[in-house]
Image (tube, one colour):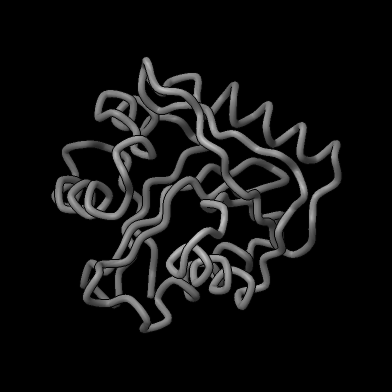
Length: 175
């Protein structure tokens, strides 16, 4: 399994990756296309194809700073889920020895409970902070999510720094 960076919307796999992105996330959790293309140029943003040898199997979109990695979106092709590809992507990011941060829907049904269990099996822990992700679309409101981190919970100071980075840098170009 390897991650292949896409740094330009002209990349031959960009449209196929966007199709998986659109299939995998509800509209309110997706960036608008102009926003996605603008941030491809940001050195902290990584739009990566997940490949098994040369076969496209998924997508991971993340932001990396000196101290942390924030996974904005992670998805595997539906027909290839439950084959440990998601675990392999997370392992590759965890191997950089930084705090890894991601958000999930609050566990309210079997799907969201399984998702939380998956991340816990991968070593992530839930943080106690009341967290609202800013909207990706003008006119929408933010949505409540659970912050999970690896390898341990983050302090209130670290959470504030993450939330400032999210609300400032990451969402600055959302629309």
